[in-house]
Image 1 (tube, rainbow, N blue to C red):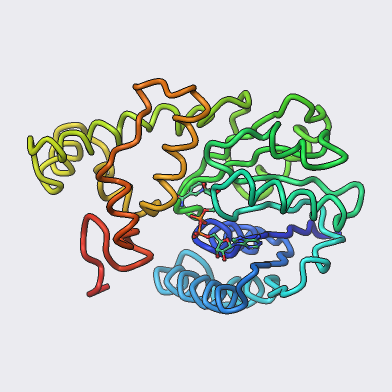
Image 2: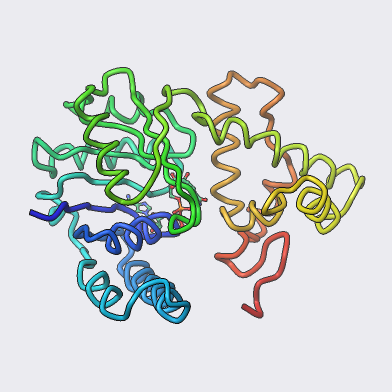
Amino acid sequence: MALSIGIVGAGTMGAGIAHVAALHKINVSLYDINEEVIRRSVERINFEMKRGVDKSKISEEDMKQAMNRIKKRTNINDLDTCDIIIEAVLEDIRVKKDLFKKLDQVAHHTTILATNTSSLSVTSIASATKKPERVIGMHFFNPVHLMKLVEVVKGTLTSDETVKRTTEIAHQIGKKTVQTKDTPGFIVNRVARPFYGEALKLLSEGVASVQEIDHIVKNSGGFKMGPFELMDLIGNDVNLSVTESVYEQMYHDPRFRPSPLQKQMVEAGLFGKKSKKGFYNYEEL
Ligand SMILES: NC(=O)c1ccc[n+]([C@@H]2O[C@H](COP(=O)([O-])OP(=O)(O)OC[C@H]3O[C@@H](n4cnc5c(N)ncnc54)[C@H](O)[C@@H]3O)[C@@H](O)[C@H]2O)c1
């Protein structure tokens, strides 16, 4: 029988995971507390797949079949028979723990419960469940249809069987995996903190502009995107939560201190691409 994935949270990441999984012939149940978000998310997936058809990356028939594999779910109980449930809600430990407590009751006892957290402790999230051995981190990257890597995060009590099955599922979605310890920010987000942090410091100190920093990093550094473009893509709200979470978990190590500028951007609603305004303006797009 075809693999079935439940996704909780149909925002940027949930939609991206649904898109890629459906194209890899996996049945997807897409759930969010906000029904309107689910509707918009499916619309966006349809739009992105259509672009794939226009660029001859996928056929119209592939698109039709993939879209049919995505089921909108407005009741979390409908995820009960999924092989794996991937959570992609807010980067907030209390919200994630409440959700995992609920998922532990809803999901079949063989279902894997995965979190797409960027930085939070998988062990802490798992502590909200009665079966921490089936809880794991499955950290995808944005945009999911382009980024090949998934960090598979083994919590203190995650079983080897859960790690093995999750790794197989990630491969079935067409991803490459790296297994990482349950440490704040795992590998990629730990390395990425100073990338954003130093760029924000340079900007705050008036050393260079957003455009100048991005330009130098791309054209002299050889990076595909500059730090400000990347922060706008991730979402400044999500990125701030990740920075704050790593800082807290590292017992306020000054190397990871969040930037007041980042906080101001979030308070002003300048989230980036998803709100049409961030370090850059996307209203024309
Ligand atoms: N944005 C990125 O670049 C990125 C990359 C990798 C990992 N992540 C992680 O993925 C997770 C989601 O990030 P995002 O950027 O997709 O966020 P987002 O803000 O785009 O989407 C979050 C969604 O979760 C929904 N939600 C909130 N509480 C819920 C609940 N209790 N039950 C069901 N749905 C709920 C919201 O309605 C929203 O649609 C975070 O943990 C984030 O750290 C984000």
